[in-house]
Length: 172
Figure 1: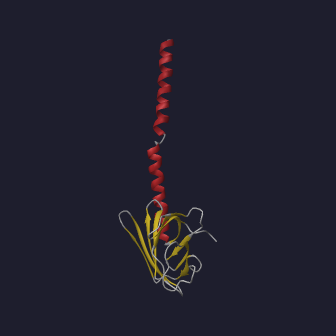
Figure 2: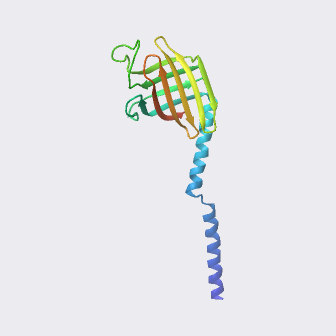
Figure 3: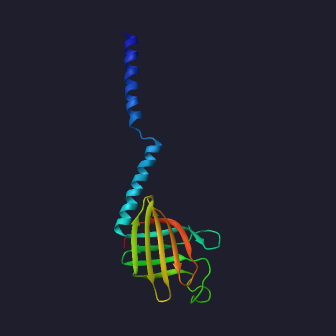
């Protein structure tokens, strides 16, 4: 009788412990769930056509990359308005004032062109904004995980690219 009771207790403990282990998610499953959730967030941001790019590295043409984590920067994208406050490192030509003016790619305006296309691996945004001194062409590649790569071309400055991420615009 005692052996039967011990065996029954061991079987009950094993049965319940297997049920608990089977319900726990593996690290791989948790990582996959996070990836799917981030893809949904990115997809909804792109669908609204209103989001903010924040750079963490700048890649000036012909120079080493520069860490931007301590420099506040952004490009706010919307189909009807784009605002940029990005640092600029590189060569200026044309009508840029001596010393580079305000020192960055600071502009805002209604885009004359704005399109977003989904590819197999990412979203491609192309926009063009004109201000009183220059014309800016922006090419933003948005990866499904929210990471992004931005290239800004200007008539008066060398091309520069940035890596970073997109996020929801701040609520005013």
